[in-house]
Amino acid sequence: MKKSVPITEHANKGPALLDITGQVCPLTFVHTRLRLERMGPGEVLEIRLKGAEPLANIPRSLADEGHQVLSLEPEPGADGIHRLTVRKAG
Image (cartoon, rainbow, N blue to C red):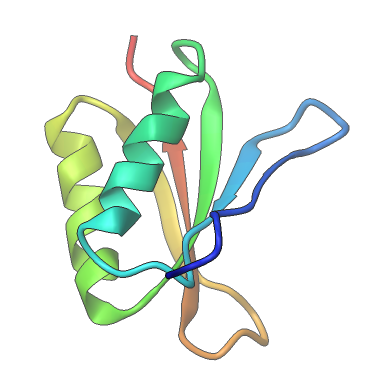
């Protein structure tokens, strides 16, 4: 069984961070959706993800739900890990 997904809030009230690099689909989207449900409209979430399936599916699924995908970029120095930045709809 996988460990729980770490969720860290930045101390400077910046974007929340969700690390799902250790998760597999469909749990990657489940954890992302649960985290967004705890956020207010317009708040920003940064998601660390890894793997072709989450990389393709999560941005598309979030956009389909009305959230704004702000960026999707490789994380420097982190092999295969990308950082997705999303603004919650509302």
